[in-house]
Image (cartoon, rainbow, N blue to C red):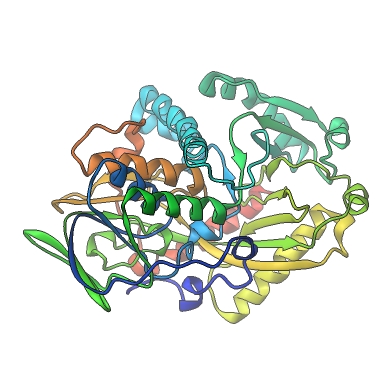
Length: 439
């Protein structure tokens, strides 16, 4: 595989809390050669959602995961099922795709949340669902002013009324800290991503999909049909779905080169917080929350009273950079939650989110590659949008109109980032500017 980070960026999950919450399970590796109507590369939310819906439609489907179930971002994210999926602003989307394109995109954001809710309910997946929508925490008085100004726009575009809380009212909401107010959008919820992922896997297997772990695709060629080679077997398929997101390889297929940009994200989880600990900080809310910084922090008090806190990761995955980001995330946590300076951090891990050149996801046919489809680029919001994209791809590979909304911004194939395999250097000035704006 040709990847742009150091090997540890793609390595095991480390001390990921989610892995402690599900029974150990695995999918058998592919042994020998077989044929399928559709082969899926990648066993995260996108791949599993596609496999499930294809199998339910009676399509012979084989999924190939390079590692164990839940290895990548789907098993190590923050568990926020919320609006999002793009980093492009509403203005940028409107300028590129018109007002109709923006309206479609907003509808898709809501539909993506509904896609997850439907999967949880229809397959009776217990994923520790909680939080009534998402709460944006203002990190400055100027940021809260912006939230006030954006409230009307949110109501117009999403059809819901956000609730604003000023700085003086934060304590009564159980949201105490060095904050300047908050806005709650009543759409979305939090969950345990590994429990959700495991439930999707069980549902796909029950529907008849073949799921294989420890089966990395080492080459893919087409001669009438696609042939996917793994270390211990091959799959010949009429159509293929690429669902590898930030864990993609530059040469599988070469079309992917420079069309995506992985970005590291880091997470810590505390020991269970007693009622006394919660009162000391004044944070008792179980809302999933994130602050208004460009380089945002995301956090929530989970059902077991552990506190999850996440932020961007390092620009490299060297040991020195890893130590530096570990110190930084602890410093930011203590600055935002000073009442918990002595709280024990029990778990820490990192993963990769995926940016796209136009800052919007892609779901569709790969140009000039007959029978090849791809879904990727959720910009840190893959729980909802990845699951939704899987439904879209399941229909597209069957030649059907998607049963869920497939907005214009997601239908346009991505271009390429500048600098090729050195493109992560683009993050250096981007992070520097963002850090200045976040002051």
